[in-house]
Amino acid sequence: MKGVRGKPKPYGGTRPLIMNAGASAVGQAFAVRNCDAFFLQASRTSLADTAQKVKNAQNAARAQGREIGCYTVGVVSCRPTRKAAEDYFHHCIVEHADWSAVDSILAMKNISPQTVPMEEFLTQRRHYAQGMGGLPIVGDPDFVAAQIADLAKAGLTGIGLSLVNYADELPYFADEVIGRLERMGLREKIRS
Ligand SMILES: Cc1cc2nc3c(=O)[nH]c(=O)nc-3n(C[C@H](O)[C@H](O)[C@H](O)COP(=O)(O)O)c2cc1C
Image 1 (cartoon, helix red, strand yellow):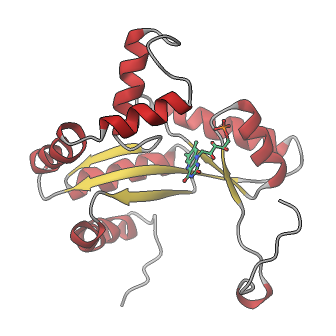
Image 2 (spheres, rainbow, N blue to C red):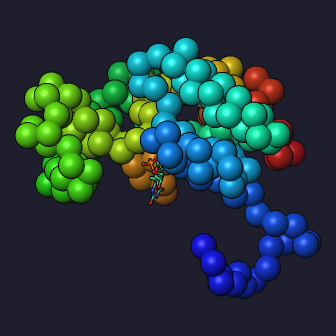
């Protein structure tokens, strides 16, 4: 952006961390050239693939003398049992998916049965309904914390999480998952 002015100014004379998402090679190259951090899509099938994406971005940055953090995005459904979490996820995100919105998004990206094989189209459709590019993390607090820990082991610095219903779900997530992440050393303890 050019000629952009920010007001209010960032805290204490600092500048904000600049993070850029990218799924394409061009998007990644832009982030690596211009930003402090890269926001990437974690693999839904392989932690090793996610680790490789992190490594590739960090190596590309190092080749330019820069160190970048990599972040990803996830959609959490956390309930006291895995079954309850899966039922909730299924109810909200599978049974009540907004398929017309999903198909509009896919059409904007030129993903249709005419442009990609049917199987690929159906997979993309399911993935976009289930968290757009975000990784669904569905389970009890131990499982959710372990999944986030695995992403950290894959080299990710952080994750932007969303919930279906923040008012209902954030207190439970904060009470049950944050403490586990603190005990695993993945978060600083900020509460007394
Ligand atoms: C993990 C991830 C999160 C994203 N989140 C957003 C978002 O919140 N808002 C948005 O407008 N675009 C979002 N995007 C799309 C980016 O704007 C897009 O990736 C970027 O412009 C680079 O283009 P590319 O993906 O074709 O490389 C996201 C993309 C990724 C990979």
